[in-house]
Image (tube, rainbow, N blue to C red):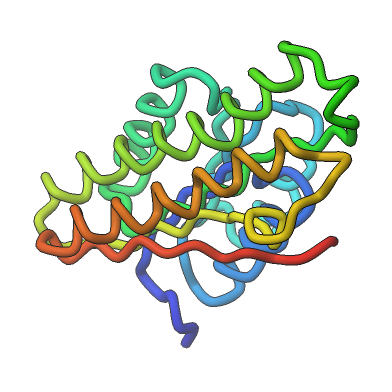
Length: 190
């Protein structure tokens, strides 16, 4: 028996990198997982890998975390497929290395939309569902060591991840009374 037997987890950024490893680990530990990503071909690869092991415990949703409608949709699809959501991992992210003086508005905006707005939309959608379920839950936001240590070629990334840290703290305080834990993990360079 795994540590996550019977749990239902949705993971954004699940098609590659840290998100894919989190999905594999949760699946191996017994959770039913919903893989969420915008990259359709990599999402299909990740889905097929887990489907071969147990098709009844894996589902995929193509969604863009920059869209609150897409985020609401994947949370609803999680509930439709598995009956509830117990865990949300906000892992979708992008990193474009650009010096401050060369940083354009588009890169700045996209970084904040994916890594800060996307996390907010996920926290909000999962919290609404978890509160309605009345059994608590767990929200894990993937931050970065870059939220605490300035990266001179990725200021936009550092700002977005710093925002994730404060969002996580504020959400933890706000949602604690509903037995919803909200935490952040800040990995180093991968």
